[in-house]
Length: 450
Image 1 (cartoon, rainbow, N blue to C red):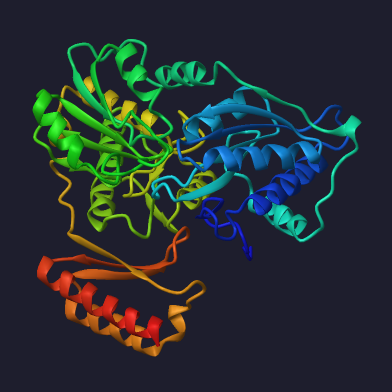
Image 2 (tube, one colour; image 1 turned 90 degrees about the horizontal axis):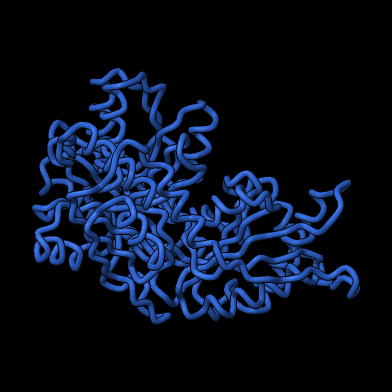
């Protein structure tokens, strides 16, 4: 599908710049409302959408514009305020709504925002429906007559219902009593939910990153900045630190020694524990998944396949192969027997299930996973920059691959959410991959500025 507005995770950008402007968001709400209404042909009533958001100051503006657009198209809107992306996915399915909408830019800084959609079954909106919305965006905006406008109301119990759902994914016979856990919510969407989940399961919880002011989301806290979490874990002599990002769909865990575990390592702990009890049909990763992970799964005779980078592509691969487990090294972990999308809280509970049932620490569970060093550099490029058309970049990539002499791999890919080209080099020794990555990045900068 050719995408003008939709990226790998909905529509995203810097607020005040296209497409994240009030007029565009209004048109997007109207277009989505009309497309969803068309999907309800033959049924009575209005399409109904649940709208949640993270804690960015711009969320108020985006929410109001979306609400107006949906209402003008005849769609009813249920507003649930700050709620994690996976919480919106869960409630959309649980309440049997037409769609769910999340206003968030995930791990990005506060100046950005975005809009992503879930279908009535709690999965990401299919490409074909996104394409219809894009086509509708090209039409003039209209407005239903007054008798056919949609209504809006607040949902007061959304957070409590999501807390109970998260707890339901943890085994009934287990609890977290005796554990001291630090939970870092990145001043984001889960700040009123995540601490309660772990506390109600019995843990002694210290919460940080739970004072959002509209501007501090993901700033020095959360899954993309674990320094404060490491300090707090050591200060509290905690057993574990759990870091979520701004919309709580990704996870990083820190152990009592201050070591941070990424998505590959956490997924490995879950898979290894389950494989000891049952046959694992297969596991999905991405082009960024560490090669050590793939080798370790082969050692357990567990099939592995790589998808394009992006949790939506991991999910598509899982559904295609009818597998249950997958994820990204960034911390998106999908357990389809627990939820329809990546969920930082639910994923943390699956890791805790593994440690509690096995009696092992996270370090012990992952001791046999010797990760290859990876160097990832983000190079800013102009929007629409096609790196594949530049021979100098191809030559730099070839030189880097030759220099590794079969001891690693090189990956170049454009970000689906930011105007950057990601340069990843993986292998040994570290000096070689750092030099290779820097050489490629320098060549990209020169080509992009030419």
